Length: 115
Image 1 (cartoon, rainbow, N blue to C red):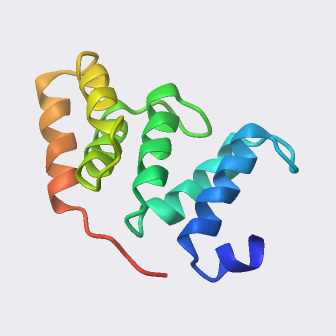
Image 2: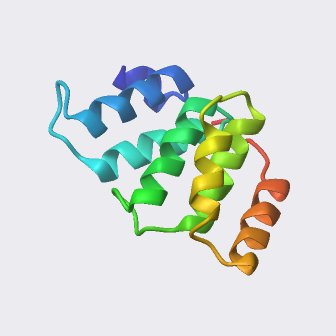
């Protein structure tokens, strides 16, 4: 998957993220998982957006950041990822109103990018 992922293939990027997060066939590495999830998420891949939200919510491979977690869950839900809205609502309970407002602003202004 690595050559395809490096060329911008979102499926390969997401799958590499999964392998690194789980340590399947590669050493377990949350930071590397975040790298690959982010590349797919930024292209609009809902499962990668959801998993990137989880990484931010739990502080795995990145500093814990509920604002970014909320933003990625919001985007994933908008793109059809079924668990994302429920998870976003759970994270929202841990946030201040201004943090929620910031997350919503980030999600509204977000645009997918192609590699």
